[in-house]
Length: 372
Image 1 (cartoon, rainbow, N blue to C red):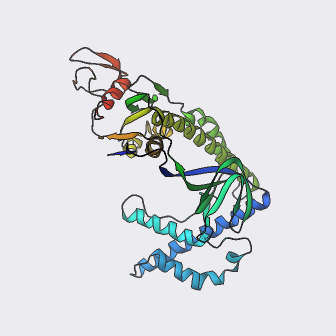
Image 2: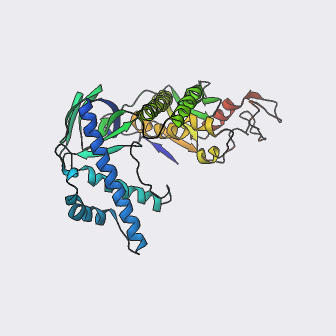
Image 3: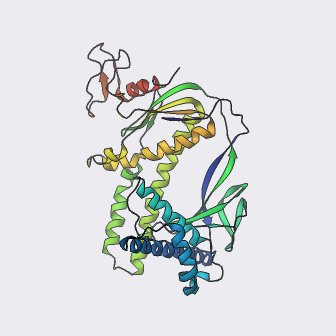
């Protein structure tokens, strides 16, 4: 399994990319955003509760049936949904999200949908009733809501819909837009990438990216804030303030991790024509309770996700090695296979006597899976 940019495609080819950036909002605008998120959450939870009720009665519901019933019979009873300044498209996307959640459940990709909670993953989506929304610069005019400012300058383009989400006490805007591919000159034809806990990524070219372990580095402060939160009275202002502090710190750790992953994946896709990576069983690795915290801190799934879309952007090919390929057990010099416990950091071949760092040895083996 691999994803590749076809070699005959020209630089003018376009692909769909998404961007997410922080909004600079006034207190009044934050209240408006909270109202939108609340309506989206209420609609989603109503749809899920009704879906469960229909199934209990032996019926087969779908998002279209729920959406029609909600618009005709439920929405008119709740006048606060039609309050001035509220975009009415948010209820439509709530049902779309519910339908997608059940689609993932029926296909076995995720568990049964849960009810949404206030303050946890607050988000909503809006559009301009089929018209494109122009964006660009540090200001954007949202449908119904009006003008809002961003901390960073946005590309001058158009989009069909916009999603606004809250992380801690900050609001972010995200949307998809078309951008031309940036086919770059490659320094290396093939590279194997061995992912690990000690070193985040080891390349067959000898380049090593250390694992910053941001969660471990900030664990002491996270524990302290979690302990403070547990000591506060539920519903009090002090508990709310402490909860925001903890959420901000979790967001900071996640941003640091994502920034490192973006730097590595961009370097790989810009400078290598073929990239071979392992198909890691991340969920299985997380079942090891001794290493689960460190493994989760690496962000292996996010690493692979970024590689896949950046490969299309920069014009390189991603090759996914078989999950059972013994890259760490195979000697890169003679091909001899032997057991390699995790505690052994150097590969000492029992056949030819070749000695090499185990991660570099695995990366070289992976690079040889690419077709010449």
